[in-house]
Length: 134
Image (cartoon, rainbow, N blue to C red; front, top):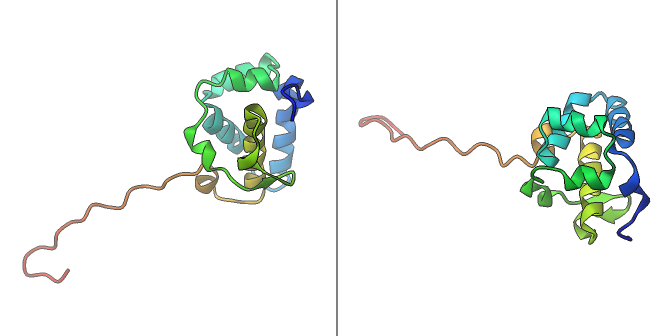
């Protein structure tokens, strides 16, 4: 991939409705897409809405992301026939991470798994009281 792929020049606001339409056809919601975008980029909802209103291109959208989630590197698998973890161009990899997360949402995957939640820690071990079976 070249560093000047045409998707980088497209406004994120023009791509966003495609993500929404894809997941809504499968019974998921805009709020869930927004949650995925915020998780991936670190934008607040207000910052995200500002990016959409400004019609930021994809390059700018990801460049201005406050904090790309470090757990995004746990995203693996095929997107458009290419392993997302093997995409060498950093910006294209970020775009494909978002594509992959949206695909998982549309396929009905649980949000906790989509967001690569590590789960809550196991409960602390509470010693049994004297004279009771553990």
